[in-house]
Image (cartoon, rainbow, N blue to C red; front, side, top):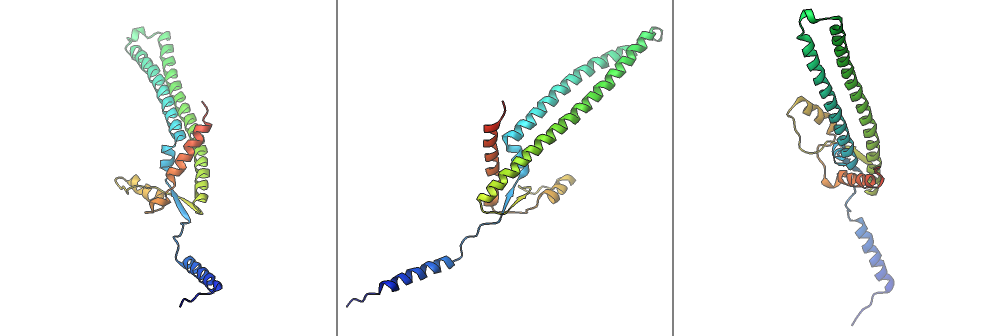
Length: 199
């Protein structure tokens, strides 16, 4: 003889089972993600372009100054080899001009380096702002509330500077790989740069 359960009892059982399934511990999302800022800057296309442009400009300027100084040093060498009898008023004028040129080139080099450092700082500030905005987007999509900037990779203590960097920059000793949003941020920054790059 078959017995049938009332439909209301069956539905009550399904609801109770669903409630029990919801009470099971679910994997929790972390409220924190981590970002390797040095890697983000180094591997972003815009960061690479900024550094490469600066290196090219510095190399070009350095070569120009080196060539000018070499000619100047040759001229000074010839002037210094002059015999006392040949040291006329024009001789001292030439020597003075050579020394003034040397001082001007040194000043030009210092001003150039200061200007380039300022340009680099401004470009890096804009790059860091973009990294911050991009990291915030990824953070929200992953349901996190905090992005920690941290040094990653193996711990290296070969020099005193390494010790300082480990103490200051490594805010996270270790973490799950899934919490690292560096690659996601780099990919988005590169996509934005490709779409907005000025040729």
